[in-house]
Length: 121
Image 1 (cartoon, rainbow, N blue to C red):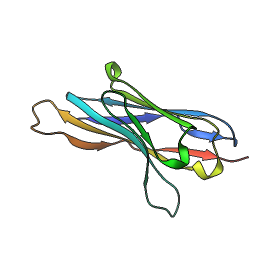
Image 2: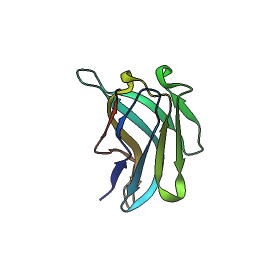
Image 3: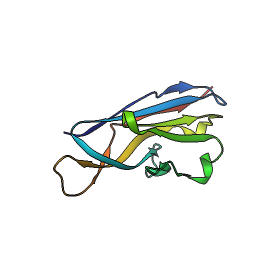
């Protein structure tokens, strides 16, 4: 079975930093796009950042210049470096990856379990 395991969430003061990690494991043939979503209480899940296999990254406007997405293809891992955090960044963060398991004909979407990020003084 393919799974994504996240780590790195927590409580931080405004202006602080956190780094989220998400590692894919299992019988994997290929990993394509990867990314991070977040969901704040009472709000819909929103896309935060995505990164292609070649490293091209895209961000939602609200995190541009503060967050950096990266990936280590050798470790099947995607990261989200979050700097200058604001209270409005408080949410559960979910990693996402389009993965083709071994022997599967096509790739499918996989999700991590979510990690809480809280920004508060």
